[in-house]
Length: 370
Ligand SMILES: *Cc1c(COP(=O)(O)O)cnc(C)c1O
Image 1 (spheres, rainbow, N blue to C red):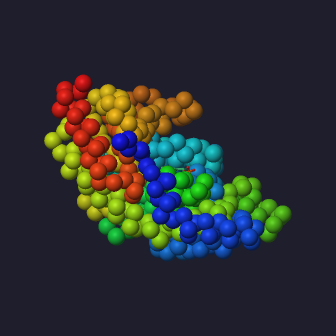
Image 2 (cartoon, helix red, strand yellow):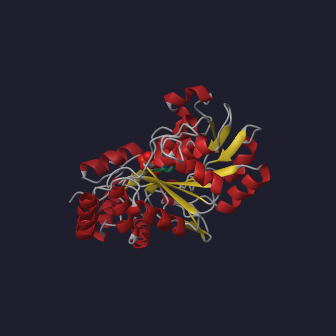
Image 3 (spheres, rainbow, N blue to C red):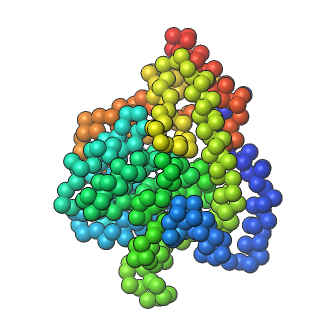
């Protein structure tokens, strides 16, 4: 049997009645944008993360963009982040009017190293943007200590880490502007694009809230040049239904990760490292492996899904040439781009499927890599 990267059809079968009733209701009322369901989702997310305000937006990318805009950066102002992440992390910094500055990542957690932050801080630094990659948080205490000492804001990119924890702090619960994505493949995914910004500061929350509707508190009176970045009711309805199952689904992902770890023992694959204190939610289950490309080819012939996150670190992307980085600037990120592969992972994945994937990987290495 083939094993897909994720199985959203199976998830939908368990939610069909709940979802379709809500969709019908939305069509009956014809209230499609910024309604009661959006408010409900904002409250649920804010509560989950112990933040004061939730602001539903049109995508994770727009959550990040609106957050960077809220810094009101002057040309040349800098935001420090990781080069080993999804593109939107850094593109949002540039589009929001600031300049991304990268620090390299830890070779075990794949997250940006807090101990490299201070050397990257300049008089132009305005904010830190930690990314909780693949569902594992950075250590909030370390990032907060640097932010406090240098008077910087923190924008959390928690797009991959909804529900994750670190020593009792929830992802999206310690920064000043905390961003989530509800892209369908995320651990909490909608029926299209969606996102959320969480904030506790009144002024920052106000800024994001008005900028998601063209920068006006009162319609047609524009204090700022905002964007069209609202969350729609269909997304909010689907997400509110799924929100009830998030914790259960994250537990299942962790159980699957444990099965993989066990099933891959004795192979040369390096299984994911969970830092002490971290409660990883395995948005992706990512291995470091020898002969990565050959292994991927082998899995493909067996019908087993696999992906590279991410094949080119952001400092080597053509569009970021102007930042002046080059090959060798961030050696760990560059090495991970060549050595990592993500295996099928979703809360619907079955134990037998995990076993099949492990068997295929064991076969590949056991058979001398043929
Ligand atoms: C998915 C993702 C985003 C962007 O979210 P969208 O909803 O797709 O715009 C940003 N950062 C990271 C780390 C992501 O994984």
